[in-house]
Image 1 (cartoon, rainbow, N blue to C red):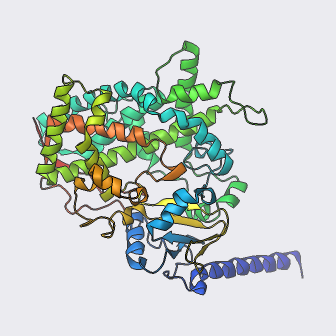
Image 2: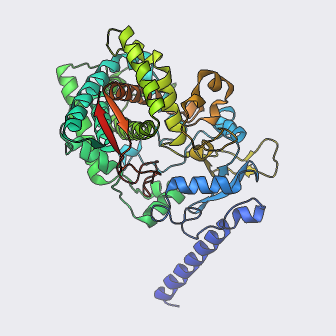
Image 3: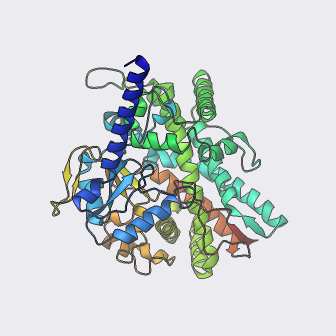
Length: 504
């Protein structure tokens, strides 16, 4: 047999092996007798995602179909058998009680070739733990207090721009305006840059903010490969971040760091904390090695703070206004609280005010229950795990784990009348009676969202200033019922959120 024949035989054998492996993987849960749907050979249980179904629709459908069948259902994360969690007690074990067995998220990251993937959200193992420890002091209440005046300043500019628009037209698309507000907040706090997207919707930072969530480096096949074989993709030096996104954020961070260091500028913001971690000579590992952040690591953390911070907060605020526009009594109760608190503080929105806006907090929490922006929590099992009390149910080492937080938040067993907007679900007395794992917009346990306090702070400030100055109601273009973006991994409205707005 010639060389050509040998190569052809080897190729056929390889393709045959891959096909048999895919077939075997696709029968994993069926062979164990654990409830699941028949998977698509390529997409697994994600058939139709981003074209016919949103991610949220998939999680909700699967949860409603299989809840009550066991502690988890079988799922196929593209080519990988995965555990789809159905019971809060198991979510509690994974996120809190047995966290050491589920510390990783299992997403693709490749810091060497794709530096922006070296971010806290994507890192695993020792790298994640080390980075989390370094950043843990960045979002303390003391640091929030330092950044508070910066956020308030952007908030007042937001109200001014909002008012100018209301004077020209009564129906406002609030989703984009809110994104411009949070872009300016995060851009200022993370990069120390006056983004000016409130005044200029085509400002560079706003354009790049949009592209972070729309531009992709790979098509469906590439995404499937990265998700199914993240370790192999890393060994092949693959990248996931589009090159123009990487170039922009690396350049902005490099310029910001150089300017601050050369001019000895201190702003008490997130970038200051990252520069300190870059230059602190006292950061040593147990073996005496330097643990300082590299410039690329600084850029990766600033990037995730920007991308996660502006999109999630603006989306939550948009859904909050959407619900308040349909519930005038709840909106007025919130406005009365805001006016009462501000009156006590001489009409000054200060850090102490935030603690007193309890009903506004309830509104934000209820919005995040109904519209859980990150609707699923991903983990990867590090060692074979037998579910307590269910010896048949074993999560194998290396297996993806999916906790459908958004679907659980609409379970009538956890929340009576779950599809109705009711801030009283988060009355302090009810919260005390509820297990923390029954409300998961920020996750739970040691790997919860490190920026939770900041996100809540900018949402409180933005909503407080808007409700004090404007009244919201529905109009003909208000999307009722809400329709969702099919392409986004996050929960987002399909189009804009149009509301009727009048100045008070």
